[in-house]
Image (cartoon, rainbow, N blue to C red):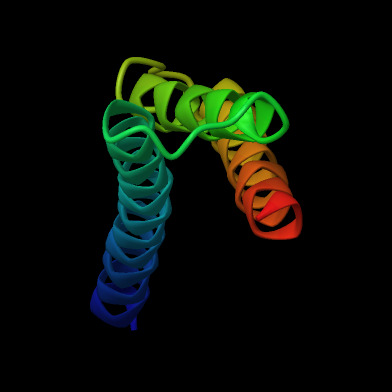
Length: 95
């Protein structure tokens, strides 16, 4: 029974780590796309703030790899997700 609990605990830990990494990668991808759109000249004064928010979300997504404590890392990841959603929504609404 103890082996089962240990295996289930390891599985939950790796599943959470994989989910966290995937979410962080998604916010970083949004930031890369927003940066690319800035470089090719898609940004106008009305939608520039949304691009900036998206790039900031990527910075928060990247910061999750440098935060070691679980609780603050969760907060940084949540901030990255919120900023990515706000940035992408703003980009779509202003285009």
